[in-house]
Length: 325
Image 1: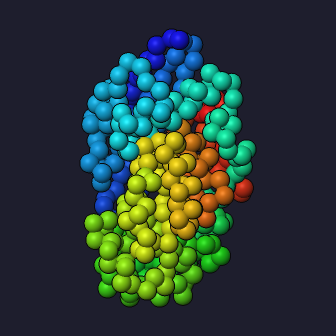
Image 2: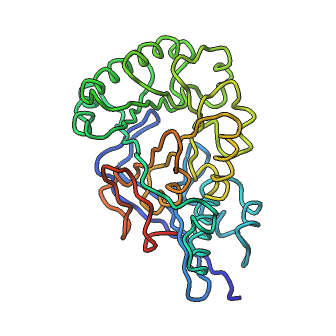
């Protein structure tokens, strides 16, 4: 068999507009594209290094370059830890395997044929007036995800979003910015406004506080849930887990986490970092049939990959082979 060749490249995608969460703002998506070559066959994957987890473009690149000359997807799981580096390589390997086998990834993974899934569209953190404008512009979308920043102004933000999009289902993401006192104050109000769930209200290291709270507003683990090994620590705190391939370290572990989470009674959300269609493509397979899907990364971009994912009233469609899988 031909040797496996691996290359890694830094790609930049401009955002359609400034994107803000409680930790800061950005105007572009910086991603790493991994390409695996075996003979005439090529597989690709993408990751988004995340500073919250101590990752940089440079550190993740070095992790990828540290891989031995030849490995398979099974041994990869122990060669790199869960995180962005393993994600890009794992997804590229799945793509390569599909090309070699001339079969789609979903078939290789023994999954059912994927269908479009309704995805959330994320509203950037801003003043209540600006967020109402964002909501009104996207009121046709069935599911809106609202970034929040902590404090009493979050109530004004949600009221404004609800006014701008009266018929949309709303979920909110606190990005670890709340306290238990703030949850107790905000949660009943948000429920009255029709909010369905809050994502990661407390810092991951301080989420034991959820054990003593009446969760009138369902809570989803994001920063507290990385891979299947995270699940035991989440019981009694969270109602849902957010699966992101940049946290699980790829599609392989993401599928394991999904099955384990459902078996242990958690609802599942499939989310993403801000990346291109190449990053979302494998996540669409994980997103089949879950409670919530948040794979809107390409919708936030001003530019995307060739053969990008299709988004329409049915949701985000599975990738074509020209893109991935």
